[in-house]
Length: 376
Image 1 (cartoon, rainbow, N blue to C red):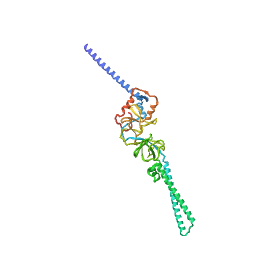
Image 2: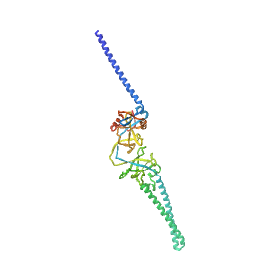
Image 3: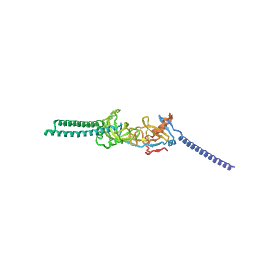
Image 4: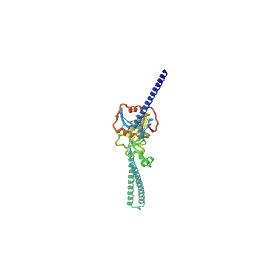
Protein backbone atom coordinates (compact mmCIF):
# COMPACT_ATOMS: atom_id res chain seq x y z
CA UNK A 1 0.00 0.00 0.00
CA UNK A 2 2.78 2.35 0.90
CA UNK A 3 4.51 1.52 -2.32
CA UNK A 4 1.47 2.51 -4.34
CA UNK A 5 1.20 5.76 -2.41
CA UNK A 6 4.82 6.61 -3.26
CA UNK A 7 4.18 5.84 -6.91
CA UNK A 8 1.16 8.12 -6.99
CA UNK A 9 3.15 10.83 -5.25
CA UNK A 10 6.03 10.58 -7.76
CA UNK A 11 3.63 10.68 -10.69
CA UNK A 12 1.98 13.77 -9.21
CA UNK A 13 5.28 15.56 -8.76
CA UNK A 14 6.39 14.80 -12.32
CA UNK A 15 3.03 15.89 -13.69
CA UNK A 16 3.11 19.13 -11.77
CA UNK A 17 6.64 19.81 -13.02
CA UNK A 18 5.61 19.16 -16.62
CA UNK A 19 2.55 21.35 -16.20
CA UNK A 20 4.65 24.19 -14.75
CA UNK A 21 7.21 23.85 -17.55
CA UNK A 22 4.45 23.88 -20.14
CA UNK A 23 2.85 26.95 -18.67
CA UNK A 24 6.24 28.68 -18.55
CA UNK A 25 6.98 27.80 -22.19
CA UNK A 26 3.57 28.97 -23.36
CA UNK A 27 3.96 32.16 -21.31
CA UNK A 28 7.39 32.94 -22.79
CA UNK A 29 6.17 32.12 -26.29
CA UNK A 30 3.19 34.38 -25.83
CA UNK A 31 5.41 37.17 -24.55
CA UNK A 32 7.85 36.78 -27.48
CA UNK A 33 4.97 36.72 -29.94
CA UNK A 34 3.52 39.83 -28.29
CA UNK A 35 6.88 41.61 -28.46
CA UNK A 36 7.32 40.65 -32.11
CA UNK A 37 3.77 41.72 -32.87
CA UNK A 38 4.37 45.05 -31.09
CA UNK A 39 7.58 45.57 -33.07
CA UNK A 40 5.83 44.82 -36.36
CA UNK A 41 2.96 47.13 -35.46
CA UNK A 42 5.34 49.94 -34.41
CA UNK A 43 7.28 49.64 -37.67
CA UNK A 44 4.04 49.75 -39.65
CA UNK A 45 2.65 52.78 -37.79
CA UNK A 46 2.31 55.96 -39.85
CA UNK A 47 4.97 58.65 -39.33
CA UNK A 48 4.33 61.06 -36.47
CA UNK A 49 5.90 64.21 -35.05
CA UNK A 50 6.41 64.61 -31.32
CA UNK A 51 7.93 67.35 -29.19
CA UNK A 52 10.63 66.44 -26.69
CA UNK A 53 12.49 69.07 -24.65
CA UNK A 54 11.49 71.76 -27.11
CA UNK A 55 12.68 69.80 -30.16
CA UNK A 56 10.41 68.49 -32.86
CA UNK A 57 11.17 64.82 -33.48
CA UNK A 58 9.95 62.98 -36.56
CA UNK A 59 9.21 59.33 -35.74
CA UNK A 60 9.40 57.04 -38.76
CA UNK A 61 9.57 53.27 -38.50
CA UNK A 62 12.36 51.39 -40.21
CA UNK A 63 9.99 49.71 -42.65
CA UNK A 64 8.68 53.08 -43.79
CA UNK A 65 12.24 54.41 -43.94
CA UNK A 66 13.12 51.67 -46.39
CA UNK A 67 10.00 52.35 -48.46
CA UNK A 68 10.74 56.10 -48.55
CA UNK A 69 14.38 55.57 -49.49
CA UNK A 70 15.76 57.30 -46.39
CA UNK A 71 19.54 57.06 -46.38
CA UNK A 72 21.99 58.30 -43.78
CA UNK A 73 25.71 58.89 -43.49
CA UNK A 74 28.02 59.05 -40.49
CA UNK A 75 29.99 62.27 -40.14
CA UNK A 76 33.76 61.89 -40.04
CA UNK A 77 36.21 64.18 -38.23
CA UNK A 78 37.71 66.99 -40.30
CA UNK A 79 40.11 69.89 -39.83
CA UNK A 80 39.63 73.35 -41.28
CA UNK A 81 42.98 75.05 -41.73
CA UNK A 82 42.57 78.59 -40.54
CA UNK A 83 39.49 80.62 -39.93
CA UNK A 84 37.45 82.35 -42.55
CA UNK A 85 35.52 85.53 -43.18
CA UNK A 86 32.26 85.69 -45.04
CA UNK A 87 32.42 87.97 -48.06
CA UNK A 88 29.92 88.74 -50.78
CA UNK A 89 30.16 87.93 -54.47
CA UNK A 90 28.38 89.40 -57.47
CA UNK A 91 28.62 87.80 -60.93
CA UNK A 92 29.45 90.60 -63.37
CA UNK A 93 28.31 91.00 -66.96
CA UNK A 94 31.38 90.61 -69.25
CA UNK A 95 29.77 92.49 -72.14
CA UNK A 96 31.19 95.90 -71.11
CA UNK A 97 34.67 94.35 -71.32
CA UNK A 98 33.85 92.91 -74.73
CA UNK A 99 32.48 96.29 -75.89
CA UNK A 100 35.61 97.99 -74.58
CA UNK A 101 37.77 95.58 -76.55
CA UNK A 102 35.73 96.24 -79.71
CA UNK A 103 35.92 100.02 -79.19
CA UNK A 104 39.66 99.82 -78.72
CA UNK A 105 40.04 97.79 -81.90
CA UNK A 106 37.97 100.37 -83.81
CA UNK A 107 39.97 103.23 -82.33
CA UNK A 108 43.25 101.55 -83.25
CA UNK A 109 41.99 101.12 -86.81
CA UNK A 110 41.08 104.81 -87.02
CA UNK A 111 44.46 105.69 -85.56
CA UNK A 112 46.19 103.69 -88.26
CA UNK A 113 44.23 105.47 -91.00
CA UNK A 114 44.95 108.87 -89.48
CA UNK A 115 48.65 108.08 -89.15
CA UNK A 116 48.86 106.97 -92.78
CA UNK A 117 46.99 110.07 -93.97
CA UNK A 118 49.25 112.33 -91.93
CA UNK A 119 52.37 110.67 -93.33
CA UNK A 120 51.10 110.98 -96.92
CA UNK A 121 50.04 114.59 -96.55
CA UNK A 122 53.34 115.50 -94.94
CA UNK A 123 55.31 114.02 -97.81
CA UNK A 124 53.12 115.83 -100.35
CA UNK A 125 53.52 119.11 -98.55
CA UNK A 126 57.33 118.71 -98.35
CA UNK A 127 57.55 117.82 -102.05
CA UNK A 128 55.51 120.82 -103.16
CA UNK A 129 57.36 123.16 -100.81
CA UNK A 130 60.73 122.12 -102.28
CA UNK A 131 59.47 122.55 -105.84
CA UNK A 132 58.20 126.02 -105.05
CA UNK A 133 61.46 127.00 -103.36
CA UNK A 134 63.76 125.73 -106.13
CA UNK A 135 62.18 127.11 -109.26
CA UNK A 136 58.72 128.09 -108.33
CA UNK A 137 57.46 125.29 -110.52
CA UNK A 138 54.52 125.07 -108.14
CA UNK A 139 52.49 128.04 -107.12
CA UNK A 140 52.49 129.27 -103.55
CA UNK A 141 48.76 128.69 -103.40
CA UNK A 142 49.25 124.98 -104.12
CA UNK A 143 51.89 124.76 -101.40
CA UNK A 144 49.60 126.43 -98.92
CA UNK A 145 46.78 124.05 -99.78
CA UNK A 146 49.10 121.09 -99.22
CA UNK A 147 50.20 122.60 -95.93
CA UNK A 148 46.57 122.94 -94.83
CA UNK A 149 45.87 119.32 -95.75
CA UNK A 150 48.92 118.21 -93.79
CA UNK A 151 47.88 120.19 -90.72
CA UNK A 152 44.35 118.75 -90.91
CA UNK A 153 45.77 115.24 -91.12
CA UNK A 154 48.00 115.96 -88.11
CA UNK A 155 44.97 117.17 -86.16
CA UNK A 156 43.05 114.00 -87.01
CA UNK A 157 46.06 111.93 -85.95
CA UNK A 158 46.25 113.77 -82.64
CA UNK A 159 42.52 113.21 -82.09
CA UNK A 160 42.88 109.50 -82.86
CA UNK A 161 45.81 109.19 -80.44
CA UNK A 162 43.81 110.98 -77.75
CA UNK A 163 40.81 108.71 -78.33
CA UNK A 164 42.92 105.57 -77.92
CA UNK A 165 44.58 106.97 -74.80
CA UNK A 166 41.20 107.91 -73.30
CA UNK A 167 39.79 104.45 -73.97
CA UNK A 168 42.72 102.79 -72.28
CA UNK A 169 42.57 105.11 -69.30
CA UNK A 170 38.86 104.42 -69.01
CA UNK A 171 39.57 100.69 -69.07
CA UNK A 172 42.11 101.03 -66.26
CA UNK A 173 39.78 103.27 -64.25
CA UNK A 174 36.82 100.90 -64.55
CA UNK A 175 38.51 97.51 -64.53
CA UNK A 176 42.03 97.95 -63.16
CA UNK A 177 45.36 97.37 -64.93
CA UNK A 178 45.13 93.57 -65.06
CA UNK A 179 41.71 93.33 -66.71
CA UNK A 180 42.52 96.32 -68.93
CA UNK A 181 45.55 94.44 -70.27
CA UNK A 182 43.38 91.38 -70.85
CA UNK A 183 40.81 93.35 -72.81
CA UNK A 184 43.05 95.71 -74.80
CA UNK A 185 45.91 93.43 -75.79
CA UNK A 186 46.07 89.97 -77.29
CA UNK A 187 43.34 87.74 -75.88
CA UNK A 188 44.57 85.54 -73.05
CA UNK A 189 43.26 82.16 -71.97
CA UNK A 190 41.19 83.56 -69.07
CA UNK A 191 39.69 86.29 -71.26
CA UNK A 192 38.79 83.76 -73.96
CA UNK A 193 37.03 81.53 -71.38
CA UNK A 194 35.21 84.58 -70.04
CA UNK A 195 33.96 85.67 -73.46
CA UNK A 196 33.06 82.08 -74.42
CA UNK A 197 30.90 81.67 -71.31
CA UNK A 198 33.16 79.03 -69.76
CA UNK A 199 34.11 81.31 -66.86
CA UNK A 200 32.52 84.19 -64.99
CA UNK A 201 33.97 87.30 -63.40
CA UNK A 202 33.01 87.75 -59.75
CA UNK A 203 33.22 91.01 -57.83
CA UNK A 204 34.11 89.99 -54.26
CA UNK A 205 33.32 92.56 -51.56
CA UNK A 206 34.71 92.22 -48.04
CA UNK A 207 32.44 93.00 -45.09
CA UNK A 208 32.60 96.62 -43.89
CA UNK A 209 35.53 97.16 -41.57
CA UNK A 210 37.43 94.04 -42.66
CA UNK A 211 40.80 94.57 -44.31
CA UNK A 212 43.37 91.94 -45.28
CA UNK A 213 47.04 92.48 -46.02
CA UNK A 214 46.82 90.39 -49.19
CA UNK A 215 43.93 88.54 -50.71
CA UNK A 216 44.28 84.75 -51.08
CA UNK A 217 44.97 83.34 -54.52
CA UNK A 218 41.96 81.02 -54.24
CA UNK A 219 38.65 81.45 -52.39
CA UNK A 220 35.63 79.16 -52.12
CA UNK A 221 32.37 80.39 -53.64
CA UNK A 222 28.86 78.93 -53.48
CA UNK A 223 25.32 80.03 -54.26
CA UNK A 224 23.59 77.73 -51.81
CA UNK A 225 22.49 75.25 -54.48
CA UNK A 226 25.82 73.73 -55.43
CA UNK A 227 29.03 72.45 -53.90
CA UNK A 228 31.68 75.09 -53.44
CA UNK A 229 33.73 76.17 -56.46
CA UNK A 230 37.21 77.62 -56.42
CA UNK A 231 37.65 81.18 -57.70
CA UNK A 232 41.07 82.53 -58.71
CA UNK A 233 42.33 86.00 -57.84
CA UNK A 234 42.64 88.48 -60.72
CA UNK A 235 43.26 91.90 -59.19
CA UNK A 236 41.95 94.57 -56.89
CA UNK A 237 38.83 96.21 -58.25
CA UNK A 238 38.21 99.93 -58.70
CA UNK A 239 34.49 99.14 -58.84
CA UNK A 240 32.25 98.90 -55.79
CA UNK A 241 29.07 97.06 -54.97
CA UNK A 242 26.36 99.71 -54.46
CA UNK A 243 24.63 97.58 -51.81
CA UNK A 244 27.74 96.81 -49.70
CA UNK A 245 30.53 99.10 -48.57
CA UNK A 246 33.84 97.26 -48.42
CA UNK A 247 37.08 96.52 -50.23
CA UNK A 248 36.49 94.90 -53.62
CA UNK A 249 38.43 92.41 -55.73
CA UNK A 250 38.01 90.57 -59.03
CA UNK A 251 38.00 86.75 -59.09
CA UNK A 252 37.51 84.33 -61.97
CA UNK A 253 35.61 81.06 -61.52
CA UNK A 254 34.05 78.32 -63.68
CA UNK A 255 30.59 79.18 -65.00
CA UNK A 256 28.79 76.26 -63.34
CA UNK A 257 25.24 76.90 -62.12
CA UNK A 258 25.82 80.66 -61.85
CA UNK A 259 24.25 83.46 -63.85
CA UNK A 260 24.99 87.13 -64.45
CA UNK A 261 23.76 89.23 -61.54
CA UNK A 262 23.64 86.31 -59.11
CA UNK A 263 24.66 86.90 -55.50
CA UNK A 264 27.18 84.45 -54.07
CA UNK A 265 28.63 83.61 -50.67
CA UNK A 266 32.42 83.76 -50.56
CA UNK A 267 34.61 82.22 -47.85
CA UNK A 268 37.86 84.17 -47.39
CA UNK A 269 40.46 82.06 -45.54
CA UNK A 270 42.20 83.93 -42.75
CA UNK A 271 45.40 83.22 -40.87
CA UNK A 272 43.87 81.62 -37.77
CA UNK A 273 44.42 78.37 -35.83
CA UNK A 274 43.15 75.08 -37.25
CA UNK A 275 39.54 74.29 -36.32
CA UNK A 276 38.13 70.82 -35.62
CA UNK A 277 34.71 69.77 -36.81
CA UNK A 278 33.05 67.70 -39.52
CA UNK A 279 32.12 68.06 -43.18
CA UNK A 280 28.39 68.06 -43.81
CA UNK A 281 27.74 66.50 -47.25
CA UNK A 282 26.05 68.77 -49.75
CA UNK A 283 23.41 66.06 -50.30
CA UNK A 284 22.38 66.33 -46.63
CA UNK A 285 21.61 70.06 -46.67
CA UNK A 286 18.11 71.33 -47.36
CA UNK A 287 16.93 74.93 -47.41
CA UNK A 288 13.94 76.12 -45.42
CA UNK A 289 13.03 79.71 -44.44
CA UNK A 290 16.26 80.97 -46.06
CA UNK A 291 18.39 78.82 -43.75
CA UNK A 292 20.34 75.59 -44.21
CA UNK A 293 19.28 72.50 -42.24
CA UNK A 294 20.12 68.82 -41.90
CA UNK A 295 18.20 65.99 -40.28
CA UNK A 296 20.09 64.10 -37.58
CA UNK A 297 19.19 60.49 -36.89
CA UNK A 298 18.97 60.36 -33.09
CA UNK A 299 17.53 56.87 -32.83
CA UNK A 300 16.53 53.93 -34.98
CA UNK A 301 13.26 55.65 -35.88
CA UNK A 302 13.85 59.26 -34.75
CA UNK A 303 15.02 62.31 -36.70
CA UNK A 304 15.66 65.89 -35.53
CA UNK A 305 16.15 68.94 -37.76
CA UNK A 306 19.36 70.89 -37.02
CA UNK A 307 20.50 74.25 -38.40
CA UNK A 308 23.95 74.29 -40.05
CA UNK A 309 26.25 77.01 -41.31
CA UNK A 310 27.27 77.36 -44.96
CA UNK A 311 29.92 80.00 -44.29
CA UNK A 312 32.80 77.55 -44.78
CA UNK A 313 32.31 75.74 -48.11
CA UNK A 314 34.72 72.88 -48.76
CA UNK A 315 34.88 70.27 -51.53
CA UNK A 316 31.86 68.01 -51.18
CA UNK A 317 29.90 70.13 -48.73
CA UNK A 318 30.34 72.55 -45.85
CA UNK A 319 32.59 72.52 -42.80
CA UNK A 320 30.61 72.60 -39.55
CA UNK A 321 31.84 72.97 -35.97
CA UNK A 322 28.44 72.48 -34.32
CA UNK A 323 28.29 68.82 -35.36
CA UNK A 324 30.79 66.15 -34.47
CA UNK A 325 32.11 62.83 -35.74
CA UNK A 326 29.80 59.89 -35.19
CA UNK A 327 26.55 61.75 -35.71
CA UNK A 328 24.40 60.52 -38.56
CA UNK A 329 22.79 62.87 -41.07
CA UNK A 330 20.11 62.08 -43.64
CA UNK A 331 21.57 62.31 -47.14
CA UNK A 332 18.45 61.19 -49.00
CA UNK A 333 14.83 61.83 -48.06
CA UNK A 334 15.32 64.92 -45.88
CA UNK A 335 12.59 66.79 -47.77
CA UNK A 336 10.12 64.03 -46.89
CA UNK A 337 11.01 64.37 -43.20
CA UNK A 338 10.55 68.14 -43.39
CA UNK A 339 7.13 67.69 -44.98
CA UNK A 340 6.13 65.31 -42.19
CA UNK A 341 7.43 67.70 -39.51
CA UNK A 342 5.41 70.59 -40.94
CA UNK A 343 2.35 68.49 -41.74
CA UNK A 344 0.49 68.62 -38.42
CA UNK A 345 0.82 69.99 -34.86
CA UNK A 346 3.28 68.01 -32.76
CA UNK A 347 2.31 65.72 -29.91
CA UNK A 348 4.15 66.38 -26.65
CA UNK A 349 5.99 63.70 -24.74
CA UNK A 350 7.91 63.85 -21.51
CA UNK A 351 10.25 61.01 -22.37
CA UNK A 352 12.62 63.23 -24.32
CA UNK A 353 14.05 60.31 -26.26
CA UNK A 354 14.66 62.34 -29.39
CA UNK A 355 16.33 65.19 -27.56
CA UNK A 356 18.47 62.91 -25.44
CA UNK A 357 19.55 60.96 -28.47
CA UNK A 358 20.44 64.23 -30.17
CA UNK A 359 22.55 65.26 -27.22
CA UNK A 360 24.22 61.90 -26.67
CA UNK A 361 25.32 61.39 -30.25
CA UNK A 362 27.37 64.58 -30.59
CA UNK A 363 31.01 63.98 -29.89
CA UNK A 364 30.45 60.28 -29.26
CA UNK A 365 33.76 59.55 -30.93
CA UNK A 366 32.45 56.66 -33.04
CA UNK A 367 33.65 56.63 -36.62
CA UNK A 368 31.49 55.30 -39.41
CA UNK A 369 32.15 54.83 -43.07
CA UNK A 370 32.07 57.72 -45.50
CA UNK A 371 29.56 55.99 -47.76
CA UNK A 372 25.78 56.21 -47.86
CA UNK A 373 24.18 53.42 -45.92
CA UNK A 374 20.62 52.12 -45.69
CA UNK A 375 19.12 51.97 -42.22
CA UNK A 376 18.99 48.46 -40.92
